[in-house]
Amino acid sequence: MHVKKGSMFGICLGTRLALLALIILIGGQAQVFAGGRKNTSSSESASTNAPVTIMVAAAASLENSYVKELIPLFQQKYPWITVEGTYDSSGKLQTQIEAGLAADVFMSAATRQMDALADKNLVSRESIKPLLENKIVLIKPAGTNPPVSDFQTVIQANIIALGDPASVPAGQYAKEAFTSLGIWDAVEAKASFGTNVTEVLNWVGEGSADVGVVYATDAISTNKVEVIAEAPAGSLAQKVIYPVGIVAASAHLKEAQLFIDFLASDEGLAVFKNYGFSSNK
Image 1 (cartoon, rainbow, N blue to C red):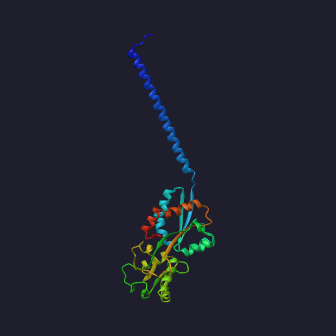
Image 2 (cartoon, rainbow, N blue to C red):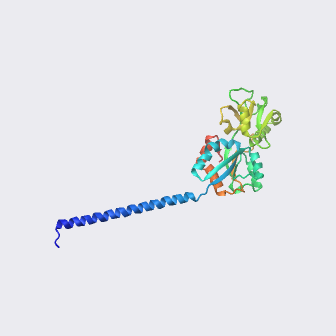
Image 3 (cartoon, helix red, strand yellow):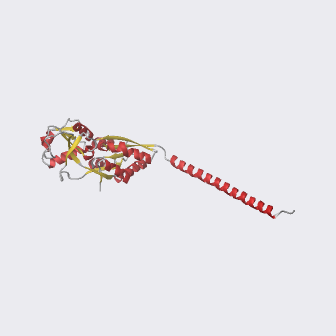
């Protein structure tokens, strides 16, 4: 059979175009298949993390930073982990953990309560991080002028609001500072003791007390109080340290460690800084 040269060229070109189309089609299907496998793999990876709820027992002075920012940020990062919190004086939380509180993480406003739990093997000593530093300050109701200019002259006030030194670290620090100044007995005679530092802050803010002692982080959390002075240098034997650790009885050790690692991360420490804390170095 005789085929014209032009016809042969047309057949060859058509064959090449058909082969090219076939290659593109196969390649496209391969990409779709690969993409489908990738999505499935990602979905399967997410589904391997079963929903978990952990309980954090934290000092009352941490509540604002935890509730408003830290917990929401953590849950965005680890959406399968729900974090619930209970906030009170560190001494009360210590007692509750000793009584069997189903907490996974404990963050105290002082090393005393953390060490006590670690000594009883109720907190894993290896997990403890002395994470933050705070300051103790003397405050007054905003807009008032009590006859007090510093810690030394606090006894000029009629009512002094303090955390109960028996269970509230802020109260323990206040007692230590006033004892070092030689005026604790006079202060105690005028003191009204709160069950946690938030209660002390509220008393001063509403004018139920002339002055009070709280953490610097509490003082900047409201415009209802003003700072008179920081505790004098040397009046405290040690810095005000906030340690965090894993409760030994936790059934969610992995998730508890993830939460502590997040708190200690640059992102977590930046949040704490916004609330007046500083990193313990």
